[in-house]
Image 1 (cartoon, helix red, strand yellow):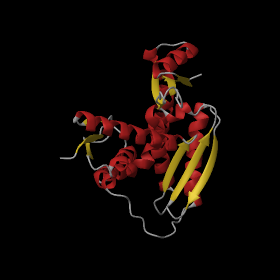
Image 2 (cartoon, one colour):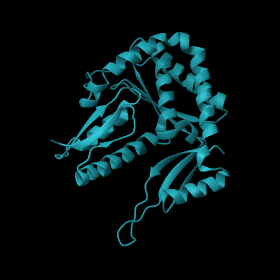
Image 3 (cartoon, rainbow, N blue to C red):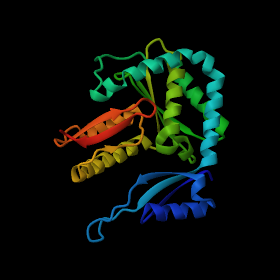
Length: 260
């Protein structure tokens, strides 16, 4: 078993249980906190902490597989690098305001969707894991969503969804190489993205409260543009708090501070 999810009264308790079951030590695993423990009121409505623990060797294995796949197709995606560079130039604007989409129906070519699905299946076959894929097409938004289900999904998610984001990025390159009109591929695993949004919203509120209490700014860990936007939106209506992003990709961070 390459990963495990555990609950406990505290994160530390859950981690100790996970390490015992995996028969390893803390320095050989990556730990992601899915839910923080909550004490409740007078002992009522308390919630246990929930974590996902992944063996570092397993995380390296998926990284190696993705790297090998990228190497095999990189000559076909040189244009993708140029697109990524252009995208980085617009990240700040995209974080600051919601995207305005033209009211129309997008043309989503079957060849693009099939290419994306075939690419994902190639990854899963290389990892020797069984994955059930559900496909949802939204022509009004130009979005194709693949929802993945299976018994070994934690290793595809990675720490804070980093592996999932890499798979989604690569799949977008593959799909758009086979599409005349640009489409967007979204990959979700066991509703991870929805849970991640909830986690980030709770984090934003908790850190905003800390800033109000201490008067000191808080700098978050590096996040991708989508997750940074979630933090910005979560706090945009707080009259005492302002947020901004600092640094360059891929180390760009959200800063939470008091309004001046």
